[in-house]
Length: 243
Length: 269
Image 1 (spheres, chains in turn brown, orange):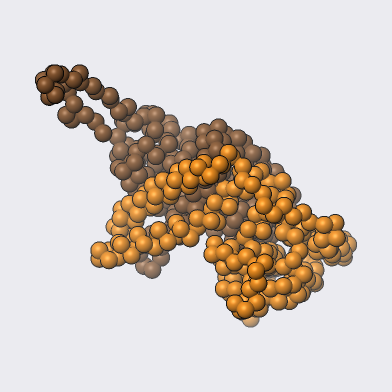
Image 2 (spheres, each protein chain N blue to C red; image 1 turned 90 degrees about the horizontal axis):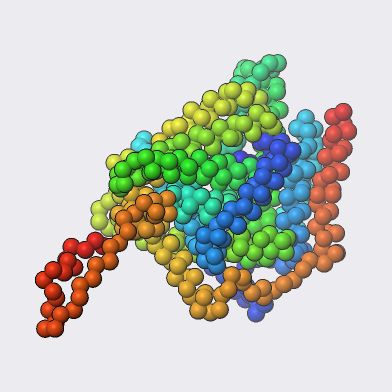
């Protein structure tokens, strides 16, 4: 659910727009440094993925269901800059074409959903994976925590914007309490889905999880010298080599 | 979605299958023909003017709404297409409805219910400004093909890489959505039924598999582009720039809006 037009006043919306433009400019530069000319197709496909996975319904019971927001997931899988870039593009397309989120509030939505979530989730995830043992379960746990924390912090960013320039009669304290309170619950779901998704990618293609790529065991190259009769030398250790 | 008949689809018309084309309603009207960059700038400026208008001047929002309805009429967009798309704003109608019930004094009695006067105004402001914003964005998407919207962004000097990312996103949306639909069919044909939190590991597996497939598709797309000579920029085929006359026509929208907003501020003061 994105901020519509008229919820936050025009000066604060415009200021957030300036912040969003600056953030996207930095993200473009940093992401291009990682991806070169792969930036457009890779970030594009990541953006589609985030857009698609937001449509995947996770039933909670009693007829309700939730879906992934994807900020922490994108950061863990493809890194903070490409992740923020992909989510920003998703938000731009949603506002321009699907009327989802106001055009005047686009800057606010980009700041809250793309940048705040990633800025919280990525450092937290990196801190945790460096402290925890190098295992899939530990990395899933780190994903859970990073995603869980990122959602209420993003909600708190909205509450801050509301406190500065909100058009409404709720007191800023009420908004902060209500937003953070509900988003802790939403964050629990987000954390669980993010952890399960990261776990699934780790099981099949751990090298695609950028957040732990430097921690993966290096594949070991073992060689055996050829011998005259075509069979291998007895001291060779080719069997059981790691994948 | 487009109600155009096949017969009117001439050789100059572009009918793709990406998602933006489904939102697009094909017509030949001045609104459709206006350059996309003009439409984007005019709409964003207009919405900022609307957002900056004081809520107590209800008539101003009536004028804003009338302007957009008139543009939709000129663009010959039928209400049965525009109105259903406005459901995006329903959550905010509920949120706005809470404000009169919880807002501060003074209170007013409406049908025996105590309602807060400031809450009513705040709720009205959110509904009015939100509705105008949603209607404007719907008119933009219904009168501008996705491809032209991207060309408009490029004409507005949005960085080329960002426009390319958006273009890839729109182009592969259906491919990835179809992939997701096939995975759902595969799950359900194995007897899977998403019932509660206990089904989440399976859905998480699907989300993970979808990521791997999307990422690998991105790599394949990149290699295919390289083999066709891609070097980081896309060739621009239709570099049509808006004329001064188009800018003048388009910017009448925020200009008229500004006059209305200034009048509203004058009455307010």
